[in-house]
Structure formats: C-alpha cells, structure tokens
Amino acid sequence: MNFLSSDSWLGRFFNLVFDLVIMHVIWIICSLPIFTIGASTTALYYAFMKRTRRDEGYIWKNFFHSFKENFKQATMIWFLLLAIGALLFTDIRTGMAVTTSFGQVIIFVSSILLVPFFLVLLYIFPVQAKFENTIFTNIKNALLMSVANFGYTLLMLVIILTFGLCFIGSKTFIGLFVVCGVGLITWILSNFFIIIFRKYLPDEYDEDMEATGTISDRIEH
View 1 (spheres, rainbow, N blue to C red):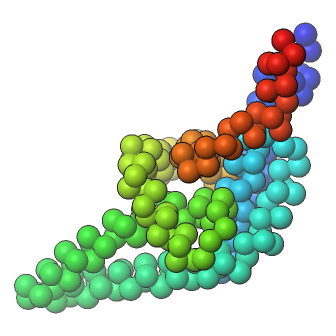
View 2 (cartoon, rainbow, N blue to C red):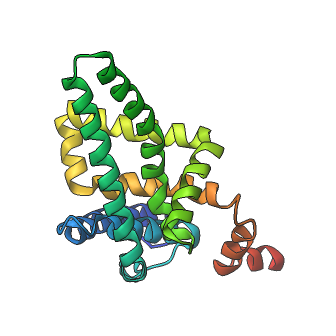
View 3 (cartoon, helix red, strand yellow):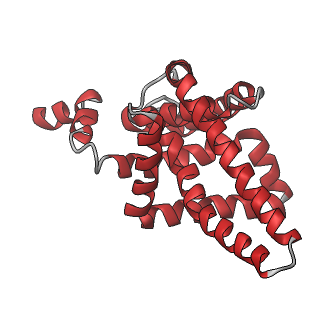
C-alpha cells in the first residue's frame, strides 16, 4: 500500500493540512478590507462543509463561488452585527461611567443582550452559507438553532474559548494559529454544523452518500 497516495490516511491528512493552510490564507486576504469579513467567513464555512460532506476537490473554487453568491447579504449581516456589537459595547461603557443605580441597570441589560448576540454571531454565517432566506429569517433561525442545539452550541463555545486561551498562553500555539488558525477552527466547527443542519435537511445525508458513491458501493457489495 502506498502511504503517500491521495487515498491513504496519510495522503488525506496532508491534503487536509494543505486545505487548512490555504483556506486560512485566502480568508485573511479576502477579509483585509474588513467590510468583507462576513462574506469571506460565510464562504469559508461553505467550502469546508462541502469538503467534509462530499470530499470535493479544489476547495478554493467553492470558497469563491459562495463569496460571490453571498457577498451582498453576508456583508449586510456583518455590518448589522458590527452596529449591534458597537451599541452594546457603548452601553456597557456608559453604564460603567454612571455611578448611580441606573448605570448598573444599563450594564445588566446590555450584558443579558450579549448572550443572544454571541449565539447569533456563532451561527449566522454557517446558516447564511447553508440556507437561502432573507437576512432577518437567517438571523432568527440562527438564534433558534443555537438554543435548540444548545449542547453542540456549548461545546463549540468551549472549543473557541480553548483556542483563545491557548493563543494567549502558548507561543507554539500562536505559531499554529498564524499558519492555519482560522482554517482549523472553521473546519472543526463545520463538522458540528453539518450534524446540526441535517436535523433540518433530513435527506441530505443520503444525497451526500449517493454523490460520493458510498450507497452504490454498498449495493454492489
């Protein structure tokens, strides 16, 4: 058996590492204008979910396909999230500056609102990559899915937090993050979102198996 062939476990591992690095770099380049972060993040989730589900080659082609298709809507979502985040941050800073009980109320309310904000932030770009709906429908669905699948949501938040703590406390991890950090995190989370989304798209699993030839192989054997 040739361990370096593309079908071997070692070949698949090196292909994955290459995809993680190249997609990390592409995401950074496409996000440099800042206002395109929403579109590039949506495209990154789209590409990795496609890769994981059907093991499709040329992952960057799927990235740029999604980037073009979702650019307008994903960019509007990104600006909306930035505005809401800035408003909540400003309210908390204002509450901290006010020494009366009213300031404490502002901080409390703003802190409560941060919970759904971060839940939507976690889900919205994968949802945008997967479902064709209006902006507010996708935002609503992102929030509902995050609550309905709270176990997965909590696990993904723990993973993100762990990456953040490792980034702060380990020079080695900083090097890893610089090389492929965004690609690695998105690939990991994409696996969870595939499982979550199949609850709402029950026929997708069989379609993926058929597309990859798995079903036909089982029938022949």
